[in-house]
Image 1 (cartoon, helix red, strand yellow):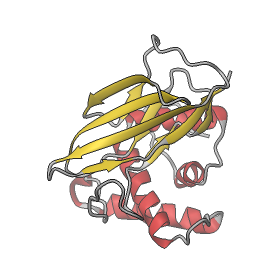
Image 2 (cartoon, one colour):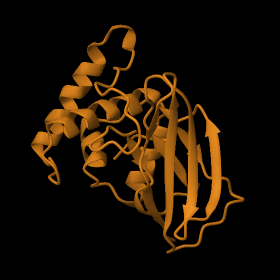
Image 3 (tube, one colour):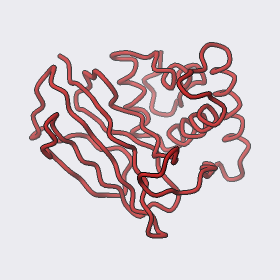
Image 4 (cartoon, helix red, strand yellow):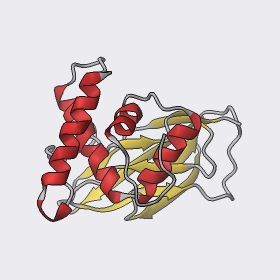
Length: 192
């Protein structure tokens, strides 16, 4: 699916499959590992995700040719920008708790994951000063937390997760205007 060479970016097909949650196992892990290391592809996926969520009816997914067309259109948008700089999200920051408020884009993990090491990856937000990633057990007990400017963080080997157990993670961004953004609570389950 994806070339192992570090200088290759995600294709429109790979982006579409990833956003439509059609990638499983090793394919999803390869894409998430690439997103963790490639700011240009993360930016591209954020743009495509923004197009899809803006044009999507609630509880419906774009699939097939429409999704690929949206990915191709977003790729064209990113490529035509001056200096190759990623676009700024069209959404204005919003405080937590506001209905229909925009959220930080989540790349993974979502659902069952067999990634080793487990990587948490989310989209950057313009004006974010720092991000706080928090991982909890199903009972809400905090297992691990990390503050920093990165949008991709690997879970340290010292944090042991039980296969088949449910865990949650959330990222909160502190914005330069004093506001905050969040990914919302995300669920994942490590599998062997």
